[in-house]
Image 1 (cartoon, rainbow, N blue to C red):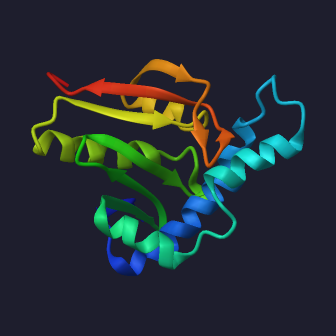
Image 2 (image 1 turned 60 degrees about the horizontal axis):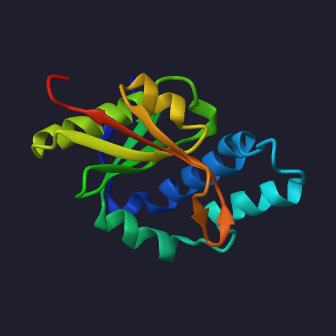
Length: 169
């Protein structure tokens, strides 16, 4: 069964939240072991800052409904999602761990870039996690700078500021 990309619907809230939590806690967490971190507690704090344990669907759903969000379905299940802001930033890109490495992120990014082009944008930015950096690079994004001092809920969670130019692309 092929991958299907479609617009987010309100009924997708619980599924996108589940993808978000699993993608961070199971996939992205492996990328947050920088040399300067000497303790698993600090790594755990990074993950909890990024994905608070108390996050619930009532908090999550309104943000997804306000954003231009697309979802990926594979074999009848929601396996990823992506947001594009009004400022032409890919703000969220998360893929379920079970389908990682199968091109889901590339399809979501391609759909977000198509929407950006439809809007007349010439540049799209993102703040990519260590784990997402490669997916964005495969889609033409380049690193502007590594943000080693990115603070999320008072905790250091490094990321990469990236962009792709859409002129002629």
